[in-house]
Image (cartoon, rainbow, N blue to C red):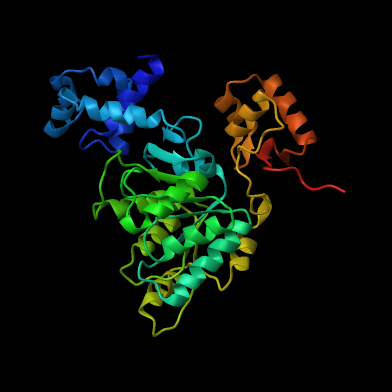
Length: 369
């Protein structure tokens, strides 16, 4: 087993360790490499604050399960994104004190594009479902990647409307990425794998548990520049997503409804708490505005005209504005090499020079003539 495989196996081992969440995992990594900690003694594990369930697993891990995890990662479009490494979504890392590792089934490139969460009631009204389709479609056409949770109702309609536009959409799951939930959305999940991504912080094979869905909401909001609540009751999980978005200093939008509609009360509560009232997708697009709102929705792999080194640079750049130092840190290239490539890419109209030493990748050159 090569060093990369050993590292991946150690990470997968710790991902499955009972009682070791993102905060504990980050603490352990500060102590020593995970591959070394995996070979520690029971006494040393206790000294690290691990409980007996964790020690039992680490002492006798299910090697067949770990082998299956590694085989899954070897397949096309299967990824493990690790906090602090290139490729991990910057917005999510900024939003959370302890960012979780993410398993991705699909293209991780879409996680670096301007994202908007579209969430709402599972048992939405006909009008709520219409609004979910309308807003998701228009936001996708404006270049935003729609993020939701694959649940019935608003989530489902937002994903489907986006896919119908030929645009990518991301589903954040409260299960393993290989266990789509609900069962009625298995076909939709297959579409997302090919035209977007399924992501989860939970180990492969993790089944649906009630406590997992509120937990995944912090990832939905953390990935996104803004969260739109289409329709929600006062007990809706969508309100959790919206409140998390506000705590993460992200924009929160809510669509008002009839005072006689129980599914409008959650949105009205958000509006009283400071969410922005919106009546059309154009209002969101105008409020967010900026270069990123006008970007073409082509994926990052639209780089066939670039050289190998240029492709590596723009993959490291992602779709968020990025400064020169960050590019150097992500790529390991010299200052001169990056400067030369950026100049070339700006001349090719593939990168925008935003001023102040900041740059942004343009999916396709602007039309000329």
